[in-house]
Image (cartoon, rainbow, N blue to C red):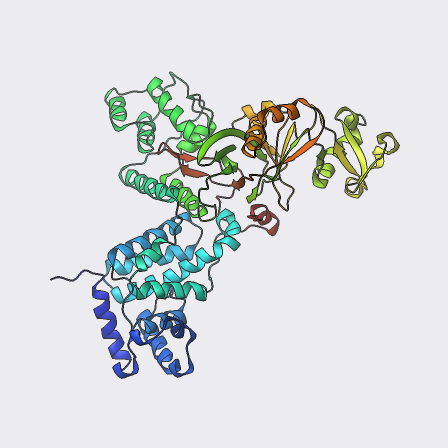
Length: 560
């Protein structure tokens, strides 16, 4: 019977091993305990030196090989048998490595994937096996480091070029999986246990297939409305067809009709396109729609792959959770596995970003006071008060001595002409009411950055398609509904909630059933209808460039 390509690895590796290390110097793998193989007892030093030499000879000039000592320990422990004999296991790992390479966060992983394909195509199975194992160690190190460093790596900084070897615990798990012939399950377990990851993988493959046939450009300037003559109608038709906004038969009908003007069929397809890209759904091609139409398939694939990596950071679906996707400007609430609320939100503007975080809703505050954060006081309010002495009065602000003292400082006793915002010794508090920046509800979510969800009197801003206007906190359009749902879920009666809503007094109500809150950043995903969605990169996190420490802190993932 003919041997498969990967099954030939064992024969080639064993031949190489025999040529390099004498048979009597290699104890059978069944006599070695997993722990002992990693601890390198003194009597195995000679064996490990020979194992290292064996690795170096196979590695030859492969610059991508990094973990020489760990490779020597691992192959020595398993008796120099190949790890990648199972084609399904090899393909599974290659797909994960490929998705990481496509994300553009690391030149190292991109080079590794390319080299693996080169060795496979050239039937160099010795180097394939060694590089695949070394790349698995590098990938394991990446996965282990994501909780600590992912907030920088996947949001502009890119992955460090040289990562340390994976942890001893990770290596033990790998060896255990190999010994019981469960490497395939070990590799599969490295990716997020999330259907959204698989959906992105499939979306990328569909894009690649479409791009391999034809992907024209469409760059017509000006506003394109019904009746506008198109310079390149076939280009527009093909792009919409490739992206799924036109069915194949619809595109063919438009071509057969030799459409030359922007008609209702194309406008309907553009509406579908606009909906999937978070744009104003009006069927008119303006600058923003044109920008997304002009985006090459390769860039779309990179953005999808990058967002697949971000799924490693977000918690898996939970029975009850509140999720705010910052670039989508949307809040979604599930309770006991039921989808109970969607709401538009307003998030921090690019200069004052809403941080990524995980917390819980601890309490709901009715008619809250607003204790103005120092940064907002200095940057926004004091400059206005200095040039408009009536500003604080009109907007119901009070000057207090400190956060630990409720003593009020009469506004008229302060010489606002000489106020230095950075040296202002007092604090500002806005009383509850129609002018209060927090509106009628505040949702406390414990964290280090004083971020919370709240209502707002500026309801008109929710009509905007792009809603990055706040100073970091999240404004919720349907805050009243959110308050009712969370409180009744914690056992408060609707009657009691309505009583509290009817009052003007400030009242904080703690929640017995605390719901997890996740503020995340996904600029691409596949929705429940199987449609690929993209959103504008409001904080420029999709662009891989060195981030300053000041920028990086805004992406920190908070945990209780």
